[in-house]
Image (cartoon, rainbow, N blue to C red; front, side, top):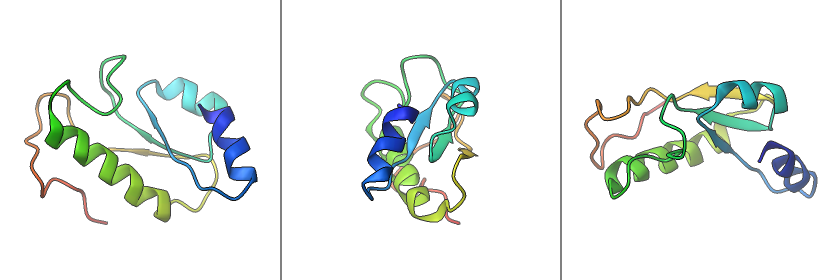
Length: 93
């Protein structure tokens, strides 16, 4: 995804990637990335956990506007199955 992100950014569209394999994000260095230490195949959360998924997507979109340095990776503070999610779970900066 990081390589595709660069091409999209070249035409002026901002992008952000959600990574669950930090080593890949560090090697490819996409323009902006959020990282979650979650199981493979679940970048936005558990199946059917809408609050968790909404929180991850909302926080990622918020960071899309805040990250200014290309190649930045932000670790999101959410723990797999150990974090209570609700509509107020979005991290404020």
